[in-house]
Image (spheres, one colour):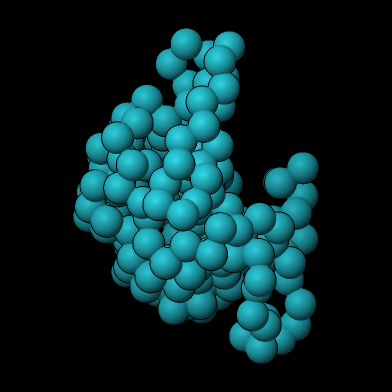
Length: 174
């Protein structure tokens, strides 16, 4: 299996072909402010990590600046072109909204939105419901009340594990 290295602006993006049709893209901890356009050229990508290179939770979470994180404020609608994605890691960014095109990710199994402190997750429930294969949704430290967390859990498929606590986050990450 060949290893492909693609240079994206000033950042290196390691792409590893895991099978004939699976490509993994890891841009975690690259201090990105936006997603390089070249990421969207590889529609066969199944794993995309745009989060922190190592997630660390310390109380109070809002007082920390994670030096291993990216600083992405929005996900472009082009994300919908990555229809083969199975895992999308967006933790520890500055997201406020999810793009409408996220519903096109029909193969998505794992979505990590944790530590996006301004993301009001309940506003995106309709989008999340349209992800038929979603098995794990990580939403630790997003804007959400306990009641909203319960609504999410009740509304999504019973097969979807909704991770809302730090211990659950690390247990499922093993």
